[in-house]
Image 1 (cartoon, helix red, strand yellow):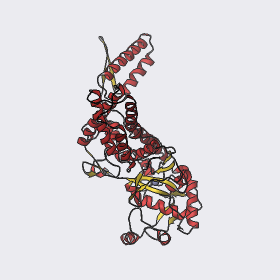
Image 2 (cartoon, rainbow, N blue to C red):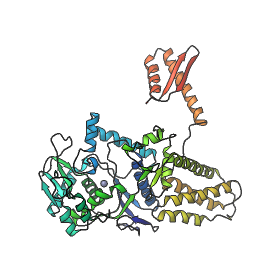
Image 3 (cartoon, helix red, strand yellow):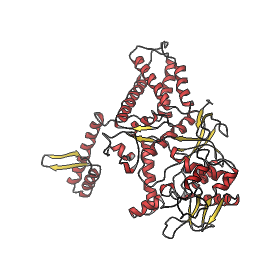
Image 4 (tube, rainbow, N blue to C red):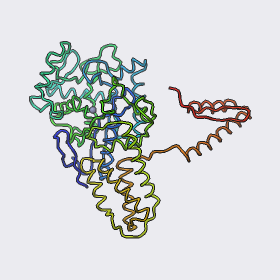
Amino acid sequence: MTELHLFNSKTRQKEKFQPLVPSRVGMYVCGPTVYGEPHLGHARSTVSFDIVFRYLQYCGYKVRYVRNITDVGHLENDADEGEDKIAKKARLEALEPMEIVQQYTIEYHNRMRELNSLPPSIEPTASGHIIEQINIVKKILANGYAYEKNGSVYFDVLKYAKDFPYGELSGKKLEDMLEGTRDLDGQTEKNNNVDFALWKKAKPEHIMQWESPWSKGFPGWHLECTAMSTKYLGDRFDLHCGGMDLQFPHHEAEIAQNNGSCGHEPCNYWMHNNMLTINGQKMGKSLGNFITLRQLFSGDHELLQQAYHPGTVRFFMLQAHYRSTLDFSNEALQAAEKGLNRLMKAVELLSKMKPENENSRDFNFADFKSRCTSAMNDDFNTPILISQLFEGAKFIQNLNSGKAGMEKEEFENFKNFFEEMTFDVLGLIPIQNNTDTNDETVEGLMELIINLRLRAKQSKDFDTADAIRNQLTRMGIEIRDSKEGTTWDKNIPQQ
Ligand code: ZN
């Protein structure tokens, strides 16, 4: 097995990756809270850890990749007070919370599939693991690291901090936190403002609530990941991943819950992807630069000069290391589009090439392979891998124009490896351009559909004729009948 080094956010250094069980990896990624359209932040986190999942598999590991869906318990402002994000959206749209969950889980899956991110091995939901969560609260209470107040249960951070370090992952100091929160509000029922909810008693109007030994209520947001990672990966597993914004309080709380319930930390390595900016600014709804993936892929946002293919967006993200910040701009995305096309042309060329049986003079495949894998073995350095692939693309051009040669067997190895890196490891997808040949196909299909409709009308099957027209209208295609015949036109859908 290759020697892989990854940056552990907990120790803040690169460490040699050694799984608990040889050749198997347990990997947990904090997934989305499904109350809105998936946006760029979701894409960055999912794509970053999709690479980890893919590369570990490429290295020969059998990976169990668990990524949760948060469908209950995530309150506004990531705090312990306020409305549940999903319940709030449901109230605003007059829908059931589970309708919101269903709608945005599907949206999330669709967008991630468009970005060519592989689905996880297990995708558990918070609401499906209430019993497991209650059991962990019981354990933490029994160990003395939590207390009950008016039907809610809170994690006792001060008590816990006497036995375990608190704040190591986020680099926060408990004294500073206590200082900062001392007189913030008198409304909380917590013993201390640094404590966090494990179980909250629900107000009568709260829709999502369950029976528990303490009250009818719902779990605290951080608890679900402890419950689900323990259930599917064990109370100690290899890799825990998520966005950097989750380090505190979410992941710090997970460490505390694990220590508090079973006396040790949840995982050996923590990985966090960095945040992204839009034209140099943090993305936020109040700044008017909040871009959903649907908008990005359709171009329907005032900041976007064009639609960007999911393949371009993925490639753009991978051109930066997951621990670097990433700035979105039209210029950068357009440059990425050109770069991706260049790479894909090389791959296409490669697939058509029949090499001469020559010795390669200026290209050493073994060296090339080692440069590519070394990049990935060094904390999943996709930008270096991509730059190597561009070097490879240059060689492919030379090979094609006869300026370089390669021995047949080595060529086969090179070709397989190049495709493996491009498609299996980076998961790149070519940009389908709907010009030329595609247009011809569409013309042909439309002629066929119009003829079928005409035949339906001639045989007085008006239901079918109308159904065809309606379906086309829904697809944004308008058909017009006149004495000269039927014509069609593609409408730009009205928003
Ligand atoms: Zn989580």
